[in-house]
Amino acid sequence: MTIMSKAVQPSHLRPCGWQALLPAPTSRPELQGDQVADLAIVGAGYTGVAVARTYHRLAPDRRIVMIDAEAAGEGSPGRNSGFMLEIALANDASADQLARMSTLNALSRGAMATLKAQVDEHAIDCQLQRTGTYRAARGDEGRRALARYRGFLEAAGLPHRRLEREQLDAALGTRYYAEGIYSPDCYLVQPAALIRGLVDALPAAVACHERSPALAVQRDNRAWRVSTPQGSLRARQVVLANNAFSRPLGADASRLTAIYTYAALTAPLSPGLTAAIGAGPWGLLPTHRLGCTLRTTADGRLMIRAQYSYERERDNAAVAAGLKSSLVARYPELSAIEFERVWGGTTGLTYNGAPLWGEVAENLFVSAGCNGGGIVKGTLLGEALAKLALKQPVVDISGLFGKPSWMPPEPIRRLAFNAIRAHEQRKGRDEA
Image: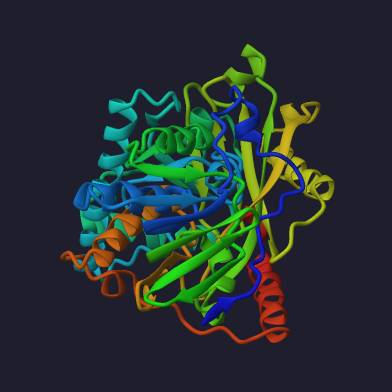
């Protein structure tokens, strides 16, 4: 039985901006010839790495082979904003479900502790720092969302500070926002450096092959065969950890779609401009899903992330103009600053935000649809999936996160996405 004859692979118009700041990475060979493993992992991102590390710890005698369509750090895991949240995302938080949210927060803290231990043990130079995070709103819609999140934080007894415009100006150097919240439960990281370091730190028993996209997954007697351009991999168990690109390989395409998001980095700012945008490293997340993410970097740059497109990457030059407009609205003094890097990246999205997770056929497993927060949440879901594959006790993922809801087929899905996006853009126009 063939799950799919050909998979849609990641395709980016521009290189990853975070990766471009790093030295040349370790090069790993493509998968060549016919190989055999106990476990095949498709996707060398945060989820795939967590699966490999946990599976090896629990079953050290089994052979694990991990493949990825791109080089470590160049794909989606290296293209995110580098926020590592120890507590639930604002869109996930609910004050009327404190028991569930408390469990999720505890799991997130555990996953974050695992990542921090890996960084420390293997001396991964990824600029990891516990900075906390700001959330700020300008308009009525954003302020209502901020109030809901503040209610959750208060009900859960989580530390936070409420900030008015003047306090945000002092911290971030902008009077754009009317009010905000600061929470200490967040780390910032250089994401391309982190994923490269985590892949490098995998046990020697885990083989990793780059530039080896999975083209098909087929039943092969009592095992599975994963085909790549230059070879194949026969394994008793397969984990699909390549997010939205898992759809053609066996994941439920009726519950998962691909969204492109966009980011830009300035060149290092002058000392005067650095002082003007706030002292020290900081990160800001929007209160509305279509708002702007902002953060500073260890070498004095400013990153902005915003805008979405459905299933296909937009022209990056047009994206850059929109990002620049949003940046200057917040920081008029940066009007003469040009972006050094602009890039797009993909994420897997489900309609209700619940991950697509579990065993989808005998010994074929998937974890996709992180819907944001991919570093910590991906790690958590990957650890749990490895335990599920080994029939170890595992937390009730569906009970905690829910199950992904059905989405209509094309072209209705595209039309619905565009209609929802237009509606949300109107609601959240003050946060753009």
